[in-house]
Image (cartoon, rainbow, N blue to C red):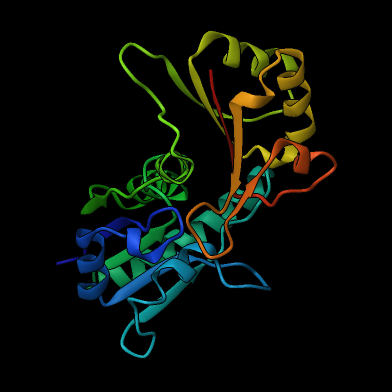
Length: 233
């Protein structure tokens, strides 16, 4: 019998925000898979679960996910990743694949599920939800995301002035994820809409590396990748 692949949400950054169910999956799975950087620092998801996993007692399976849009490279790397996971599952071992936030909200695990089903058919998979950075930011900033009939949107920020402006205009609250790469554009829109006092920005929310930015501090700044903006009108 093959093992079960668990998609485990590790939460937004604070290790204490991991769920009891996720903790149990990490304890009981002989293999812990995690996103691995080709070089440099330890992955963010791996840092979150370090307090709960002893590498001497587990098989730690680091998986590289290429940051490219080249279809040939993507197919090659994803096939290699799927094969590495399948090798462990075919030995009858459960694999807990950890991801920051929630496994089914803008997560690498979404594509992992798709590739594994395409290559290996109806394998056993279970998803353990996690607290997303969106929930973490709302709590950290004491900022309600929705009340009553409020309309809320989660929007991957992109270099599209009209689309970003429209998202703000059409919703009571917008959470812009991956906002770092277009922060100057977003600041310009906020100023034009006279909403700079309605926006909050935070990087690596709830973690030890968390930064809560003021709008003034963001002028000319280069916030890191795991940064989001909440605009609450």
